[in-house]
Image 1 (cartoon, rainbow, N blue to C red):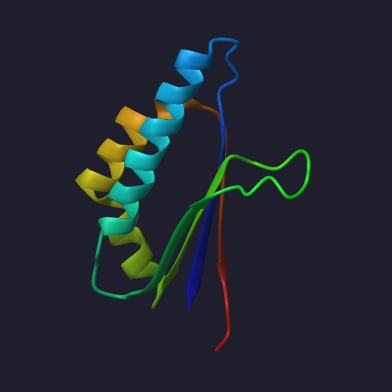
Image 2: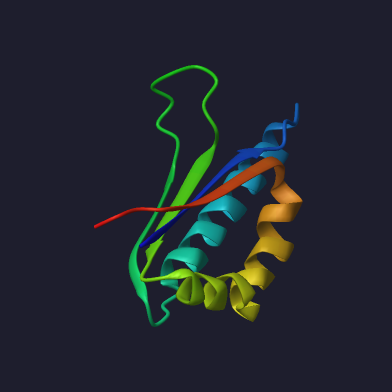
Length: 104
């Protein structure tokens, strides 16, 4: 099984209106990612940081895939890439990704 983990940090802004707009776009982006479905997807989880510790990232996306081929279909999907390009790339100052193998 392949686990994909993405964490993002919203851009910093001193403008409360911009922060609110970015937070709303983040919710739209996370809902869009959560709505995606592909063969070989075993699990999808998205959420915003609860702020339980200082220094956290703004959000996380995790998904589990049957194998590398299933993950690659998701990674190349046009709607997935549209969400990345039109939402996450615009509102995030940092995004980190990792994919790793889990034995089951």
